Image 1 (cartoon, helix red, strand yellow):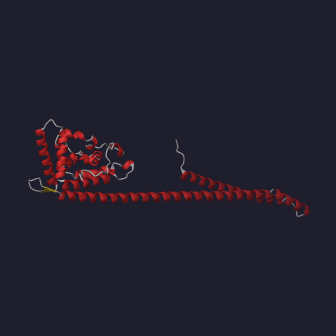
Image 2 (cartoon, rainbow, N blue to C red):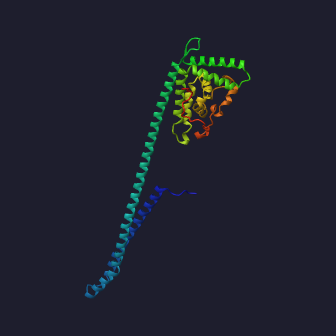
Image 3 (cartoon, one colour):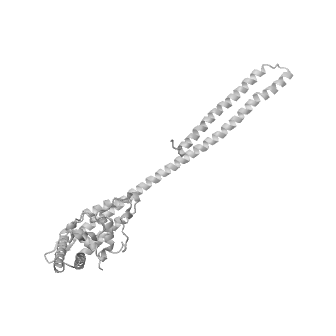
Length: 313
């Protein structure tokens, strides 16, 4: 089934139709003028130069040639009317082309604006990520076995937490293991808040910056590209500490971001203090579903995301 013509095709058809009509009507006018002339010349031969014949010839010419030429005049008036109609159609076509050009310019401006926003977002994101990595490199901790900096500091902190957790389980194996782990983490956080506080604040604000980005539904999964960059720069020690930090009362805002952006995707259960602790997070924390709708991953929030994460102050 043929689809109905669009506005452009419809105007072109109307213009072509009017132009064809003008040509036909012009030929008709010329034909009427020629017919009047021929009829007049043919009839004039039948009359002599006498007064009576001249009077009769005038009446004849008025009834034949005059009538045909009068009709030709009406036809030419119709041609003038068609010419005005054709001019109006051309004006409509010019207006349509102007609207299309404006829409194209508007689309190009929107594309340029989008590209500028993407560039600005990329610049800000990678600046935040670079600052966070500098913060990790400058982090320093001393658990009594000599100071360690950077990734080694997180390895040492995790080793201390793991050692204390094993001792706690040996003393009281009947106690809930997850509660023991959370208590130990909180105590160690208090001990090393000077290092962990800025670290988690920086990590939280990078995630929040990505999460708050306004995107149309069909581009919502672009956030994943940025969270993948961030996750790839976290060591396993950082991920495990982040795991237990997000379970603390102060880490409610961070926990919702962890679950929404699958930040624990590469964290195997056997790396946790207890593999059963994995169930403390929703499955989306480990593998985010492929969806264009960002809201499918969102949990019902019991704490506002904007609350400062992992801070005891």
